[in-house]
Length: 624
Image (tube, rainbow, N blue to C red):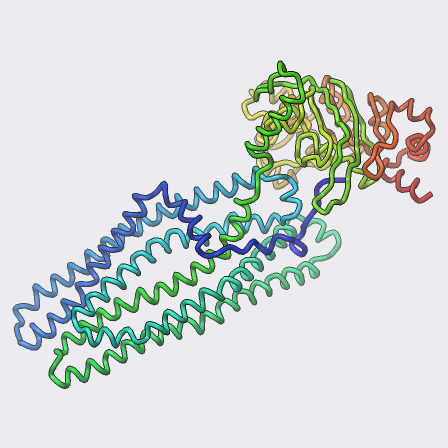
């Protein structure tokens, strides 16, 4: 049974991320600021200097009204206006510098965060991806990281400046007129209560919105990758409907956020305007009573605007914070998932290995090359739902031997070979390579010993050269050419428009199935690993192509320990050992001739197969 399980956007179990507190998200995001403390400080300093220049406007306006206009002294107007223009110029100059620093700052942080998330994705177990839609993961790496960055940069700068601005302006207001300052604070409880309510309720709406966006992106990626199947089955209208449903869920999720914001934001603005209105009311009475100059009232109101503006900005930051919290839950879901095999696990396994083997046997170094002896000792494997896939499987492969695995769909063939490079970890027993437990080997060392050629060859969207060199990035042109010739692909590559520099398209779409398979064989030849896992590569090609691939595979398997998942008996007649699997157990083993002489399940299979695939033959036997 294949260990990979496709998860579509419809049944992705990860769309509900672990709930985390706002403080936890902020605390963890703040870590990314540390390498750029000077940039963060520079941004805040420039913002504060720009704010300080803004403080000159109300004071100078008050001076013009009370000391220039009211006293009819036009000679003072020019210097005051020059001072005002100078304040505006300095404000925008500091603002320009702030924007410049802020842009570089945020791009550095985005790069660091995105690289860390991507690096963690690369090191997660294969099983993690079995339960996640690719489009969902892309949304987390791209969109959710951007939302976190906004909290990081804008939240840090604007939040700090807003708080300091509120404190500074409040001090000025009480210095200018304590009575009016007290009146201006009347709406404050309503502003604080509204902010508290929004904070406590918003994260659920934003989480729903992010999940809907992720589900839509996951479906979009699925459909783009399966566009040929959609067209082949005339399912365009069906997919239109499915995508429309996902888009509608995103629309509803976004509207859910906007509806509340459309009430919350105007309500907070009204509370701020109410404060200004009260100040005008009582201040106007003081002006009429002669206890307050009109310039002082106007200056007070202008300062009051500088007080309420950062209060309004904090409400906007609160919205950003809730959006970032929803995004942070999804990003940290990736960062908090344990890697395939962390250092502690590897060290513990290595110590266990030292205790169970001779003390004179050193642990392999990164450049260690195995001879190719592979032993499975009572190996068992179950998925997380405790569904047993393999039960007490034991086998031994000597260096250079070919081990063939046959059996019906779901017998456990793919799972058996996927345990060898630790794509999945065995839940029972152990697997050794040259007597060393594969759990005691660093993954880099372990996987350097194994090449994998799957039935569906995967090529990256690059050139032929890049895809072959993926086997060994530092290979020379001569080594590349040799591997291509041995894989019987040099000839067709030479006929391509740009030869080895021809682009293969997404997943190798510009090449035929047989051509892609031969390129993947060339890649494995270039890697030159002592152990080979081969998911039979000739099941879906014509006879002439099958012959070319078979020749290339024989060269690839020469001198290597090979595990071949067979679909045709013709490809495994020369196997040193054939294992017949059924329901996760080895029910027969031996050479082709030995199994025929035994007249068991394999012999019955051989008699009915002829040109039928092995798995289809098993289904026929089961039906009988």
